[in-house]
Image (cartoon, rainbow, N blue to C red; front, top):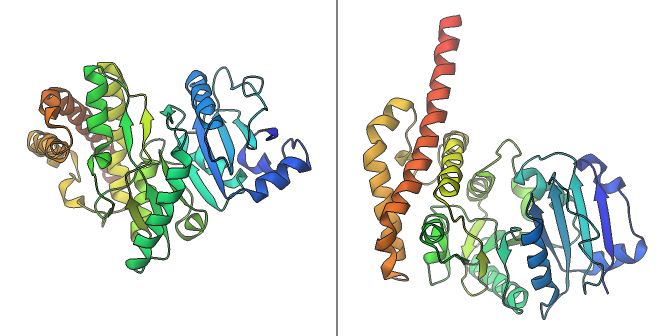
Length: 346
């Protein structure tokens, strides 16, 4: 059975943390993949996910749980040691953001392949890991045909909420999962939930930028594209996700997402569709209605082949787009104010 290991502290102290002994280290080194789960204040969801991973029919992986300053912290007593794979629990003393949590997981893991799952994911299929690994190899073949030596693989994510707001969050948040065929992604990023890559990819493009508390996966995905790393979507190993079920939860999520959009686009001015994004608050005010409307139509058209009833969720999807645009406007306004203050101070 797998050994349980706990480590605490900041990233520089990870390698010097508490080690449960040589048996874990030898087992971890023999594992082909490391599944990394960042978690913050979602202990109940995490325990459900761990129970599902425990009964996977294929389990040649190590599990790395990174507690990003949860209050109360994830207790090692809740994560029992009778797993058929090694389990490593690492704690940040304070919340540092999902980018930092993922970086900690990468630095502390030992598998050649890195697999990310969100703590609020649902892996109901006991063959999920086997399917994910099989499709990862298929993605490798697709990358090779395109003369790509490095690639990132993503499979679909589906919302498991049946409420109206929950379905809105599904349609607005998991747009990439509307595709039924495998493809190379050239015009968008891939979410990190249900995503894997060889750890050498991080040597090529760098780790997640901890400056981004949100949208860190978008910024990292754009970096992959600029470095010639293929982003590949192959459906067939789905993971569920507990979507937001309140109007306030949806608004807050997309508002905060929008706040980081100008920062991501400024970092990557040549990223796909950059011409669609306002560069200042004046452009944003002028384009507010047309862009929120067009983005809503775009989302609807992408989902229609798979879910014709998506039109019923138009008001909610539009609200999510308005929230995102509003957050973007706030950031653009703040950037404009700082520029004017610098000009005046001269």
